[in-house]
Image 1 (tube, one colour):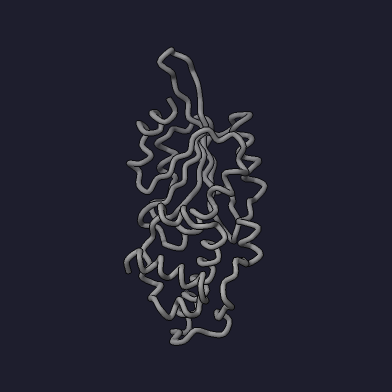
Image 2: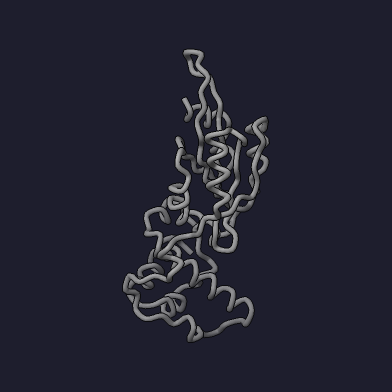
Length: 217
């Protein structure tokens, strides 16, 4: 499926209903494009992901040949499900650990993941952890959010540090995961007051040590 098909799929959802949209296209062939997803509203993406997920789960379990009544929606009118309107929940530990990293420097990095409709802390690195240890902690085929406290020396020989927010979305991760992480990123990042540099990476070369250093300086 080409991306023009996916755009057409979204237009059908907006103009008519999800039930008619899934009849028009084979959703299992959708190809991800974060640059395109970033242009969509968060509510529409979350709404789309939820419906795709429900349809695919039912299809896998029961070999769906028709769209059940539970998936037949009225014409899209800008209304969204309650959890889409309120955004992805953020566990309090995420903000607590980030404050400890920023104010007390108790950690070198924090890795977050979305689990059960909320962002939670997956792993923290002690202050002595290296950048290589941090990147090795990111899964090769799953999306993650992360923050890294990067120390560096300026050309004037001054010691400084900057806190990076890194959105990790590898090419090998699942389509639904990419869309959920992309649509929730800005809302989650706003919970972390003190982010100085943002970086998005789809493979390790896009977040190499040299790139991090160049962005910091």
